[in-house]
Image 1 (spheres, rainbow, N blue to C red):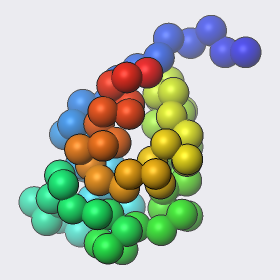
Image 2 (image 1 turned 90 degrees about the horizontal axis):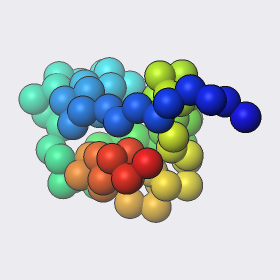
Image 3 (image 1 turned 180 degrees about the horizontal axis):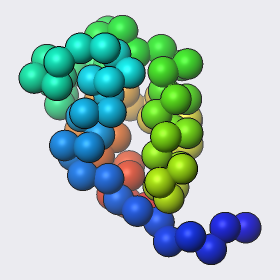
Length: 80
């Protein structure tokens, strides 16, 4: 078990990370858009999970895929 404190990423950080894995400008990320429709897939979601876990964010793939919007992902990470 890790004793590292949980970190909550900012909405801007989540948006920037999503834009990075989708290889699109940050301005193109709509907070309420279904990210699967925008090109997000399970490999990219897992890359985000690993990136955020490395920074102490407690999140898993199931939480993100269940509701694939930036709004929902911010809520999920903020609730941890």
